[in-house]
Figure 1 (cartoon, rainbow, N blue to C red):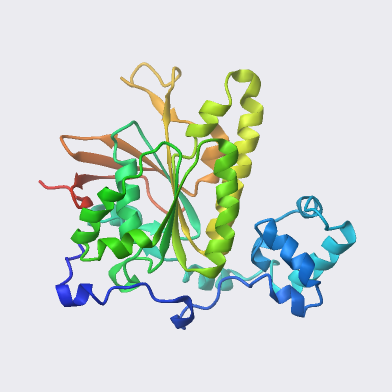
Figure 2: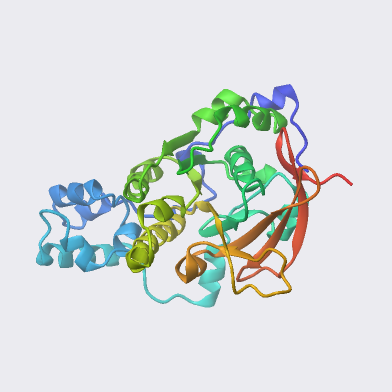
Length: 344
């Protein structure tokens, strides 16, 4: 486990500015580069107003979406996309190149050695990690711990970046961050300053908050986006079977936006999810439950973790679905200093 730093070392802990990092090549191209490619500065400003700040992000939008931006005609959109294609390679690459790109992925420690081992080193950037389980199963506690561990230097298994936190249930507690920061030997005030927080009240508000993140992430180094929880507002704003199809479509759009943010800015997306009763769970399961959100959410998440309560403050995390991790589970503990290894 990461040992608490000595006082003199703690004072040196700070985020490295983007321009100081020379060992990590820029993962995205600024939208401003379109101006030198012959695109009108006014049209570039319209793209930024629509939440598009990188050429990579631009290529993740359909032409239909882009023509929906006020002031952009089909001819302008064609010209913009053509210019962006020359700046960013969105075509085929070799498997070797794909492996090389994977080296830019950072794994952020959860605070528990056993949980990190279960996840292959920690929470991955450029991916969506979903944690689902009942209330008091440790999902939000992991979110608070990640708020701090993400700001650790990469040589201490951190992400050396800022954190964005979208709260849909009102569970974020800044005072909870203080003892966690002290455990990692960090300045609590500096840690809190590096967390940008927003409380969402409707699913539309939640989506608009995601759109506004592009401006922040293109100018500052972020490594983690937390959405706690991703489904809560959808379950409130859409009711009954009659609205289910619309709900799932809007949820899919939100999850698509999260995927694009993760890959565009190389940030880890950690989202919590609720559970619902599963009447078809079988007679041999005493309390059958399944994650909310259906297949739409299941396909969007890269890694799915199932949390459940254990003895006392102990919790169990099981890898429910992942492309590169075996199905296994580990016990961890909730402590005043956040998530930690379970004590025997």
